[in-house]
Each structure stands twice: as C-alpha cells, then as structure tokens.
Amino acid sequence: MQVLGPLLVAAASILGLLGFMTLVRRRAEAAGWSAEVQRKLVHVATGLFAICLPFLFAENWPVYMLLGFTVLVMAAMRAPILRGSGASAALHSVDRQSYGDFLLAAAVALVLLLSQRDPLLYVLPLAVLTLGDAAAALAGSTYGRRHFTVEDGLKSVEGSAILFMVTVILSMVCLLLLSEIPRQNVVILGFLIATLGTLVEADSWRGFDNLFLPLAVLIILREHGASPTSELLALAIVFAGAFALFHMLADRLGLSRHVARVYLLAIFLLLSVTAMQNTVLPLAMLVLHVLAERRAPSADRHPELDAVAALAVLSFGWLAAGHATGLNALDFFGATMAGLCIALAALALARAALVVRLGGLALLAAGLWAFWLWLMQANLPAKHWAPHVGPLLLATLALCGLVALRWPGAFRRQRMARLAGLSVALPALAYATFALIGVSS
Image (tube, rainbow, N blue to C red):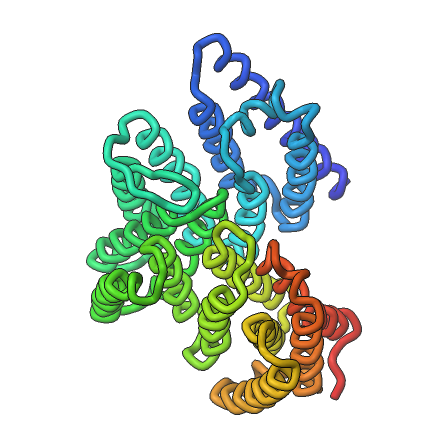
C-alpha cells in the first residue's frame, strides 16, 4: 500500500495535467488566446503543482517517478501526429525550438535533490520560475515596446522589468516567512536574486531558463544566504563591476554582449559553488572552445551558448550525483573537464601537420594531468576519496584527444553535445562502479 498510494497519486497527477492542457486548448480556441498565453497557463499550473510535491509525498522517489513519467508523456506529445492537436497544442503551438518542458522536469528534480527539502531552498526557486517567468513572458508579449536581441530572437525590456519586480517581491516574502535571515540582508538578497534571475532569464535560450533560473536562485540562497551584510554588499559590487567589464571586453574578444553576459553568469555561479582551484579547468574549456571555433568552426548556430549549456549540464549533473550518492564527484568532474579541454585542443589543431598535432596533444595532456593533480592538493583530502584517479584522468585524456584527432568531422555538428558525451563516458562509468560496488584502495 505504501507503494500503491504514490503510484495512484502520480497517475492521477499526469491525467490531471493532460486534462488541464486540453481544457486550456479548448478555451483558447473559443476565446482566441494566443499560443504564448496557452503555454504560460500550462507553465504556471505545472509549476504550482511542482511546488506542492514535497508536501504530497513524504519521500523523494515518488516525485522522481512522477517526473520521469511526465517526461515520457511530454516526449510522446512531440510526435507529429499529436503535436498540433488536443492537449499537445497548448504546449507546442509556440513557433520556436524549445526544450523547456523537459528542462522544467529536470529543474524540479534537481531543486528537490539539492535543497534537501529545505522549504526556502525548494519553494523560492520554483516560485520565481513559475510566477516570475510567466509574468515576464506575458507582459513582454502584450506590452513589450523596447526590445533587445538574443540569439533566439528578441526579448523585451518591459518583460525583464516585470520579472525583476515579481522576483523582488517573491524573494522578500519567502525570505521573511521561511528563514531567520536579518531584515537588512533580506533586502540585499532580494535585489541580488532579482538581478541575477533577470539576467539569467533574459539571456537564456531554447527553454534553458527553466533549468538555469531556479538553479541560479538556489545557488545564491544556499551559498550566500547566511553571509553577513558586508559580504553581500561586496558581492553585489564585484558582480556589477564584472558585468561592466565583460560588456566592454565583448567586442575585443569577438563575442556578442549576450554571449559575454552568459559567460559572466556561468563564471559567477561556478565561483559560488566551488573553490577557485576547481574552476580552472572549466574556464580553460571555455577559452579552448573559443580557440577551436576560430581555427575549426562548427556548423552549429550558437556554438558559444552550446559550450555554456554543456558546462552547466555537466556541472549540475556531477553536483547532483554527489548529493544522490554521498560520494563527492569533484575528481570525476575534473576528469570530464580535462577530457573536454583536450578534445577541443585536438579540434583546434585539426589543420596542423600530424606531427604537430600528436606532439602538441601529448604535451598538453601531460601538462593537464600534472597541473590538475597539483591543483587538487588545495582541496580537503576527503574530497579525493576515489582510488586510481590519475590513471582515470590519463585514460579520459587519451580517449577524448585521440577520438577528436582521428575523427574531427564527427564534431562538425552538435559539437559540444557530442564532446560532452565523449568526455563524461569514462568518468561516469568509474563513478557508477564505485557507487555500486563500494570503494577499495
């Protein structure tokens, strides 16, 4: 009965969601609602229900099961035969490519896992995504007059302003009701969360705001919620200075201002989550990606954004793995980033003579291996529990470097997605083995 109950609730939840989507579609056809209004109504209903999930289920596994079933249903609704009619039309009638439905499910799962059911850490990120993002989209599509360009099209200043105001209100209400944070810090945190949240939403693409926005809010709360007032003020000043600097350097680096802001947000969140030494390889990966795109351009539309998306997915994935298993995944994250670095270097050298490519990659691999092992000495020994990390790193470097060197054409399209899959293969296999059979030296 303890299993049957959650199963019945999960099934009823999915049926209820489909019923609501069908109702929205029928009402939209009768009242002439736009595709954006339909989509955001479904978004709000789904988000509000997601906020209630920890109160419906005493354990996490029914939530993950429900989210898994929901993803399967959403995937089925993308089929051409279903896409344009019924419940599916309420979600997929917007004419742009988006993975937002899948990323929303992933975001709920990650927020539940990383928040450890802390009410503030769970409720506020999803509330900002549910209410703030929907308000921004509807205000922008209805009242937007001043627009700015992002890679996927246009976004409105009015929509971003609405998101900022809604997020400030939500943040202050949740911080006051769900925490003991001092009042002056509530104000600073509220505006800091709203500023970063607005930038994340404005600069996201293909529905990635459904993933990046709640996780960015969660990271700020978890890492800076208990900081004293002076540190919060210093953080805000440093971020404002970095924002201005990145904007000034964007043209010199050959980047759009949109991409420069995305890089800034990625670097800021990395530095919030982990120590400085653990960000060296991710930052090196971004630099090598720019170099590889200049020496051997991919056929992807937005390669710089793809690089940040790959970094975010890998970072959040390893962070979630560490929380789920209780085994720190830092070494495996480092091996993954090293693999990405060597693969991008191999692509950057694709037009050089064979002896130059082999020699250059060998030197870079040796340097990465030695440099990374040296950097990791700055971490606590408990974070490096896994045996034989050195050989794992060498094997990952060899696999990624040789595959990218031998078949550079395989990474002409969907470059970062394919390189991310290649670089994470061995570290993920090793980590899963340790998690399943235990660790022995």
